[in-house]
Image (cartoon, rainbow, N blue to C red):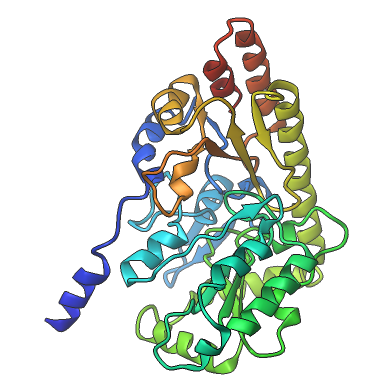
Length: 376
């Protein structure tokens, strides 16, 4: 009984993901919708193309390329289905009773000065007291952050790490887009700066091998990693052995993954450039954005409106476009925001160009919202 009560309490604060509410419409119209909303990796660059399994009686089960693309892609929590999504971190933390404090960002991500100002509510010496109410950890996606596409500089990371030392909190460095950095020189990781054992780094194979493998790894202080292992042992026991073996075999075949990582990064850099070219041609003066140096997302601020939700949910799909309104990523999902997220992982350059041509045609009608919708 106590376990059931705990489960009910822990899920009490859970709200439906706004993106899930858009999925029924998307399923009906997906054949005609240009997909730039989801954060799905492009399946054409998954290295596994086909598979066959021989069972005990000698029967061979074949998995063709189309099936493999689906098997290796993201799925839903409910199970196998034609749609894909994953929950937001704040939606996972809220039911646990966590007090989430948002930190202002700029084109590089977290602003160290703003973080310092927030932390000034407390005294550093209070961190040594038991049961203090200081922040316990900072969660960050340092490269190609979802949804903003921002990437922290080395200088910003150093300042943030020093604040972590001063106020004695952990840093959870979730870095799924590390290998999708488009600059020649990669910024040092928080883990590489760590001298106190306060950084837990999260890596994944989802963007360079396959999202559907659901495989990643943690690096951090042994006492903390051991606690994570205990939690896994009492729930899923372990990640799929098949996916682990498959991933290791694939990395060995690609010279420890270097060739594969370079190929995938170059593809997404080309995709980003195509998206930026279309945005620069058709949205200049109508919207604002920063050039992402990593990841698969373009974070767009629409000028002249306070909120993009109604514009997108009620009109965009009808015009053959799928993207995500900014409020889906807010701690307060009811707060209006002029932002929206576009993903350049899935749409081909031809589709981006097609959308841009349509935007140009309606420009002469003088309807700003229609022009933006048809571009996005």
